[in-house]
Image: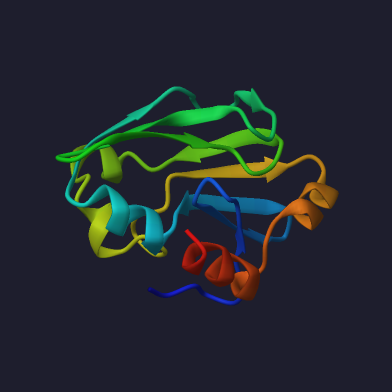
Length: 128
């Protein structure tokens, strides 16, 4: 498994990268591996929606299971990655690059302090 150092992680297997106040959010390599072959992605949000940390982004379904995905931070949705709707397998191939899910204008960057760094997330995954 790979856990990029520049990201923050949730115990529910989402990652977030914040640059200039904009958060890019996706699912981790651990999550895509556990789900196996992703076949369907459904978003429950649209651009310009106001969201809070913990709100649902949508659902990811695989041949094995379905998982709800959550926002790690609060803010305004800027962009939804429609490519993952059209080509859901990109989540298995590129969970940290082309497989990002949403971009959000962060309203409270202090929420990032509650998230795990790469080392903590890796240890968390090993303990499961």
